[in-house]
Image (cartoon, rainbow, N blue to C red; front, side):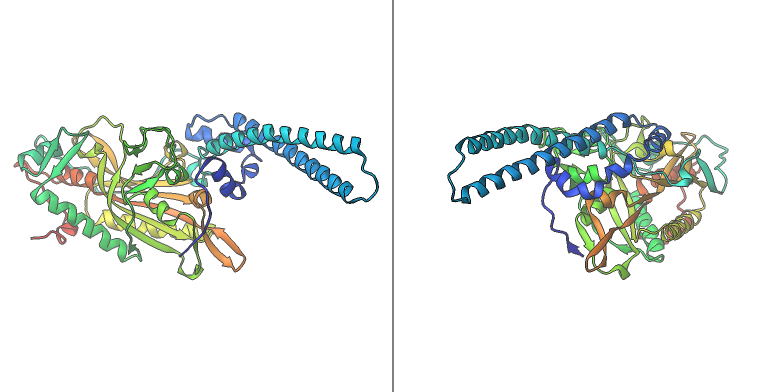
Length: 439
């Protein structure tokens, strides 16, 4: 990988860096299609306002270019008059100087307006969602469902109760949903990491290490509005809302952490694509869910994957099928009831053009909880964060991505306990995972 040396952080600098790639005009060519996308996702964005801002900016730019041309013409005329040997026309020189001064004053005002509008346009553009994949235009659809729900002849207990009974799980009051894993449950967490890692590495994924903290520019580029504090954790030392230089705690097993690693990078050797990466670590995310326990923890142990490949629909389809096969293989071997759901647009994140979730059943909450997710991103993130692949010595294209939440291990622990419990308060561990338990 070789760094793409581009300066600038955000605001006017960001617009200068990303303007050739944002292709806002293309996005606004079909306003009705964009409005349908936003409507299906149930997002609250005024595209007509965005369109008006963009065309106002284009109009001001045209006026600025015209004034720049006039200023250049005036300067050239004055320079030519200065070179002539005949007697200077003082009155003409004074008129030219006055006209030049008038142009400069107008340019100062217009330049300020342009910069202000560029900021507003870019920040609005960053809120726009990915284009919709054809599979996401309808309602949610169950693709695969395996095994039956558990049926107990005794009163099933929640994982919080089971964990407390066996002295394996302790919740503390120092922060929301904070917890400690102990004894067998702590070993089970490591075993789950080993099991899922083993399966995905057999499908060509390689280990990768990401940062836990990323800058606001990367968070925004990944499709999260950093001004909405309920969506991401910002370090307390930064008290300015939307500060692009603020550090955000996302965890090394997250799409933002992967994106941070590849931001402003060019992949020189196209033959190394597709690249399949796997990170094991923490994921930090504010969860508004009112349910207690490990299902709603803000800190989770997660296996996260990222697949980078050339921007080609056929390659994308192949990658989706390969990842889905690996996911089904993983969860089938657990022999616990689950299903795979194809999400409709209303259940997609802004960076997703399509998504599939792996959901497992909790017999205590009588709810399905998402433990895995395949997010098709296309070139949405790479366009925003300048992640490219070299085509020739003079050309490059944006890479496509698929983000894979292989397993939210923290939630899976709760589901294993609840689905595998017996009347004595003990629980069985799936054989596939038990092989990775340290004895």
